[in-house]
Structures are given as C-alpha cells and as structure tokens.
Amino acid sequence: AKVKVFADLYRKTRQLAELNRDLERRVVERTKALEASTAELLQSEQRRSLALAAAQMGSWELDVGTGRWSWDEGQARIFDTDRAPSEFSVLDVRKVIHPEDQADLDALVASMTPSSATRQIEARIVRPNGEERWCFIVAAATFAADGQLSQIGGVTLDITDRKRTEQRQNLLAREVDHRARNALAVVQSIVRLTKGESVEAYTRAVEGRVRALAHVHDLLSQARWEGADLARLIGEELAPYAGTDGGRIAIGGTSLILEPNRAQTISLALHELATNAAKYGALSNAEGKVSVGWAVENGVLTIRWREAGGPPVQPPARSGFGSKIIQASVAAQTGGAARFNWQRDGLDCELIIPLLPSAAMPSRKNEATMSTEATAASRNLRILVLEDEALIGMATSELIEELGHSVVGPFLNLAVAREALAGQLDAAILDVNLGQEEAYPAAQVLADRGIPFIFMTGYSPDALDKRFREYPILQKPIMRDALSEAIKTFSPRLEKSA
Image (cartoon, rainbow, N blue to C red):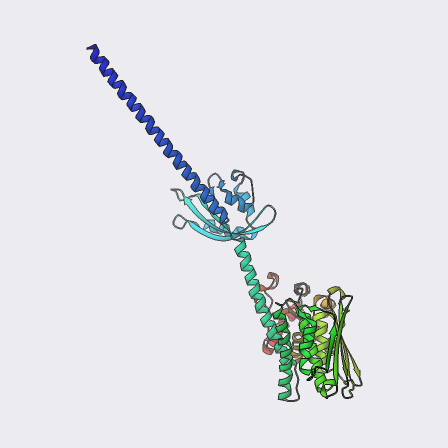
C-alpha cells in the first residue's frame, strides 16, 4: 500500500513538473509573441510618425471633459513647440490659431453632430516667432451616450508651401492679365490720340506707333523682360532710314541696358522723332543725316538727336502731337524731360532721363495741366488723374474734357501729385499700379477728405486693397460711355457731402 502511495505521488509529481514546464514554455512563447507584437506596433507607430513628418502632418486629440490635449511629434513640429501637450489648455491652443480664422473653427466645432461628426477646414496658425503657416485640418468628433461631445481628434497637414505656390501662380496670372489690359489700353490711347489728315495718314501713324511698341516688346521678350540694350534699340528703330550704305544714320554711346519702362518710352520717342524727320526734317530728302549719341552722368541718361542736311525748318507755332507724346511720356514714365531746339537744317533734341529715383528731374506742370486749370471756371467737375502711363493719362484726360470736365494732371506718381491731392478737387481717377508704388496712399487722402474717386486698373476687383473695395472700378481699356457713367456717380456723392 505504501509503495502504491509513493508511486502515485511520484507520478503526480512528474505530471506537475510536466505541467510546470509546459506553462513556462507557454509563458515564454506568449512573452515573445507579445514582445514581437509590441515591437511591430512600435515600428508601425514609428513608420506612421515618419510618414506624417515627411508629409508635414501631425495627429492630435482633445478630451473635451478634461480639456487635456495629446499630440505627436508631427503636430509639435507644425506648432513649432517643445512644450508637452499637457501644458496646453484649450485657450492656449486657441491662441495659436490666427485671429481671423478662430470664428471659422468655432463654427466648425459647433456644427458637429453624432450623425455628422467629421469636418475639414483650411486655417492659419501663428508660431511663437510670429511666422504664419497654412494648415489643412481634418477633425472627427466622438459623442457620449447622452449626445454630449466628449472627444475630438484629427490630423493636421501643413500646406504652407502649396499655398505659397498658389499665391505665386495667382499673382503671376493677375500680373499677366494686368499687363495685357495695360497694353490694350496703351494701343487704345494711341488710336484715340492719333490725328491724321486722311484715313491713310491716320492708319500709317497708328501702325507706326504700334510697331514701335511691338519692336521694343520683342527686345524685352528676348531678354526675359530684364531690360533692353540701348544701342540695339536705337539701331533697329532707325534701320529703315539708314540708306543702302547705312551712312545716313550714325549712333554711338556707352553700353547700357534699360529697364522695360524706360526702354518703351525711348522707343516711342525715337519713333516720333524719326517719323517727323522723315516727313519734314533731315530724312525727308536724299542728303540729310541723323546722329544719335548718348551718355550717362550722375545717374542721368542724356540722348541727343541731331539732324543735319535737311530742308530749312522753322520752329512750329504750337506743339504737335508727336512732341506732346515725347514730352508727356518722358516726363511721366521716367521723371525726365525733353528739350527741342529747332536749327535751320534740322531738329536738335535732348531726352534727359534719370536712371535712378534720386536723379529725377524737378516736377513741372505739363501742358495738359496748365490748359485745363485755365478753363476750370467753365467746367463742371475738377477731376484729378493719377496714371503712370503717359499715353493712357493723355487719352483719359482728353475723354474727361470731352465730357465737359476739368482735368487736374495727369500725374505719374504720388510725389508729383501730392500738392494737387491737398488742393481744390471734386473727384479723382486713380490707376492702382504706379510702377514701383501703388495709389492707395492717394486713395486714403481722398477718402479722408470725403472726395469721391474711382480706380482705373488692369487688375481684377478682388486684387484691390480691402479698404477700398466699395469704390467703383473701371477696368482697362476703358470706354467713353463707361467713363461717363462712372463720373455721373460723383455728383450724388458730392451733393451728399455738401
């Protein structure tokens, strides 16, 4: 009996040992499996974090009840913070959101319901250093059994680079549209301002001026609008008059690359001088010659046009249209001046063109300003014109006068218009883009004085400064009827302010 008891005890001990070994084996296996699973989960989380970081993304959660935040490294990187999420309150995170976008985010959260718990929005954040970043935010809400919001979680994608690319593309598109409209307005001004003794003469004059603009446009396009070589510009403009041996035209001067506005101005001025010489001056006979020389001193370019050997000429009794274009365009586009000296055998003309803003000529009232001011008493409204394109300014002034009003200007920039802006005015027409500056300071002066004005621009309305979007806009090229209707809107506002 005792042997049997010991035998059973031994057998059970062996069984217990076997069970223990089996349990240990299973524990080891389960532990290894758990470690492998944990490692895989960790790797997965690391891969997710790397993917989010590579995509400039971050994930986050908010416990609505406790106000406790949690987020990953990607979100911390977007916020540009090394503070722990637990250190942030709801108010702290709200301060990170751009003030103009906070109301939209509040509305987004308020619109979440148990049946519609996912939302997305684009919003800006402001980093501690003041840098603004654009973010695309996708949020999902969790609701408790009683329908109360309990948790919000989501992902944030930094889309700043995409937004900047879009802004550059939009800016480029607006600039292309602006340049195209401005070019059309310049051509329209040429058509309107050109006079001719016959249809044929008028057609030739318009074609010649448009061809001069097209020529300089080709030169600028070849140089990607970085500038035009002055020697080449002059040489190609005068090539048709050089004669079979090229001896009728002599050009020479220092090497110089002109920025686009000055190149266009000089091209148009040379065209007018050459056309006049071909009609009445040294290029109207077989013996006459033209020399064009230029030099730069103290930041000022002086181009001298000299005719010789032509028929006897007399100074004109009044300025012709060509000389008006030269004077107005050189003054308006460059801040320079044109000087005419009529010699017996041809014209001696100097174009004085500052190459630097500090070298600009003293401002002088142009002929259009003096003539319109002299007749102001017989006009209806005194309307200031601020336009940096000389031809557009001249054409607009002519239209305003045809409509029975007085023109103050046209002025090419804010500096020369400053005195007039403080003077007696009834209304104003402002080009938005004035080359290196914008007309908004003038608009603010007029708005503060209660003087009505309209914008005349090649830009679309949504490109205007937000402060002035309620003011009327005329898009270039402008039509006479559209300008007339716009000016009519001045009268009620003037009566109201009176």
